[in-house]
Image 1 (tube, protein in one colour):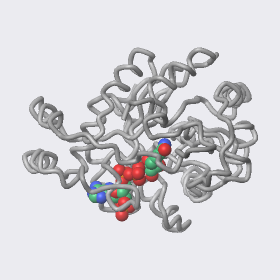
Image 2: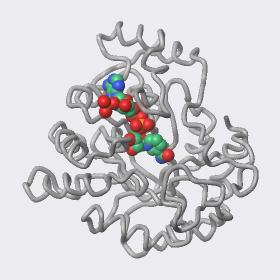
Image 3: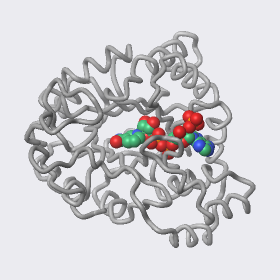
Image 4: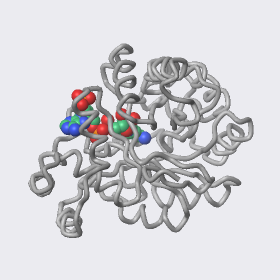
Length: 315
Ligand SMILES: NC(=O)c1ccc[n+]([C@@H]2O[C@H](COP(=O)([O-])OP(=O)(O)OC[C@H]3O[C@@H](n4cnc5c(N)ncnc54)[C@H](OP(=O)(O)O)[C@@H]3O)[C@@H](O)[C@H]2O)c1
């Protein structure tokens, strides 16, 4: 196994750094160019989702690289996600995803959020009338069908608390291989990481540098004095410190940049060596969840009346 990959419970390996592709602007050329640049730098793991709108651009870039002989499909790890509007039929949702990507299979297909929406609610910020009753047992059975039909090599979840994973494991024939959640030095996910380790579920860290520049994100992680002083000591950057922290905790880190310099900087985190004391310093940082998911909570139609319900008090 290559040293920059970790083994999943289904025997697959996942590269420990992945390129995120969600951008608010969602410009197809910018996304495609950034993915092409990333491939040349050695990124092999790409994260997309139906709701990001980035599947066609990612697929174009990867397709061109494969036909130019730059990379082989087997050396790529492509993740996409099932949106709430398609919980009733993951197989047809995944077929549409594959069509947009121009691919025959996905490496990993994740249930994006534990929310189920009306079939036409195909936007990231649902209204009250868009929610339907969540039925994870049926949704997961559909995910298992995706696997059975060879549409993906692995299935997993995203944004699930320990309690929600425990419930899922009660009825799952195939356990999730991955739980993709927010994780960075300011939202360290100790309880979830320990739980997932016991269950042999790999934790993948999104917003791994806190999403600076995103409308939901924050510069708090990269501007934190502890992160900055560790970076200074190692002649590294704050983003590299945050990424290497996540990797050192056993996670694969998903970080988005469409900027050449920052793409290079981010993959350079693999070469950074953090010291024991750096980890102790990071433990002192105050914890704060950035992506709280307020838009998935309401008083009438959502299964979650409060943020605490959504995260089962793990917030
Ligand atoms: N499963 C989920 O629910 C979920 C939720 C959120 C995100 N995700 C996935 O995770 C990916 C990453 O998360 P994210 O985009 O929220 O947050 P992020 O990767 O932590 O931060 C991205 C932001 O940081 C900037 N940036 C990148 N590298 C930087 C560096 N070295 N120094 C300073 N700024 C830098 C980017 O701008 P530039 O492009 O200008 O560099 C962008 O504005 C997403 O793209 C998506 O694929 C999944």
